[in-house]
Length: 135
Image (cartoon, rainbow, N blue to C red; front, top):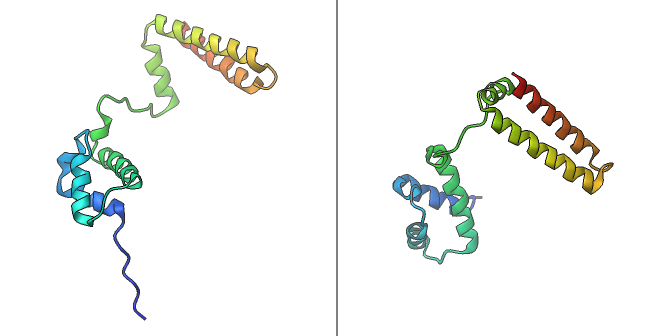
């Protein structure tokens, strides 16, 4: 018995559009892609289709490195992060320490016993900042 042929997925249509016209990945508007999709499938675009397009466009941008403009990459290791923080001015570390203190005070005010582990993590984080500032 012959298998039924699956109809192409919505994302495969969008992938095909972006492969044929990669300049559309740079566009902030999706209207042209919606029109091309409607022409190819002979149906109106739905909210579900729009969501699929949004996710696929994001993935395609990441693959082509278009979506990383102005973003910093995370530190590769904890030691690298420490070295980067040491090079910063003490005023940045002072502000960070004060912010952590404010978070600790807020957590203690909400539920000291229930948030014990959170408060403990914040205390350890503040101590790390103090050590960094001492270097």
